[in-house]
Length: 192
Image 1 (spheres, one colour):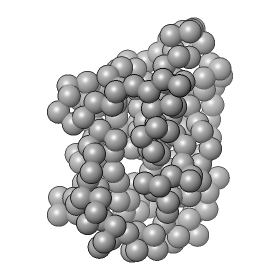
Image 2 (cartoon, rainbow, N blue to C red; image 1 turned 180 degrees about the horizontal axis):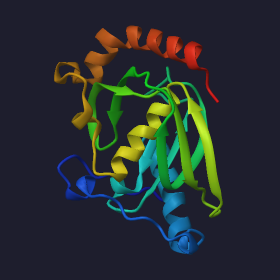
Image 3 (tube, rainbow, N blue to C red; image 1 turned 60 degrees about the vertical axis):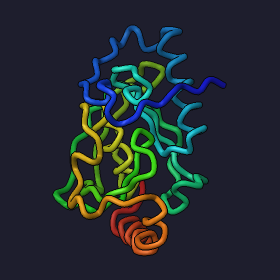
């Protein structure tokens, strides 16, 4: 298991637009090792997702996996998914208020409006084209990671800067209401 150092807000790589990975390089040992290292790093940090930009590699690659996570016990399970050169399109004008955190901005959370139904296109780790829909709260994880590939942090998209709070304050004051919102979004849109 190899875990990489996660860079923090203020590091210039987090503000770069990541470069596409040539399809013929996806199966290379270098990219496959980076994918494995991202998975290990995400799991060691108890993240729901991580982008290559967060480990100081400005390439269009992220991994998502949710479930049995002590940081986000209220998020629905989502299987390990590797996305390379992703393109995300919104499938509805609806939005939900997602209380987000970030491995590159430790200790804080804030509200960002996210689309509950998205289409994701790109490549998997086998260099195969993928095209699928994600519904519910998990769609927010994909949007968050995709933002990283465009040099955008969730704090740039805060609905209201007054929602920014520490993890401790979130747990004390907002977690119960957020759990209710998760249930409502999942009932309204249902996971796919």
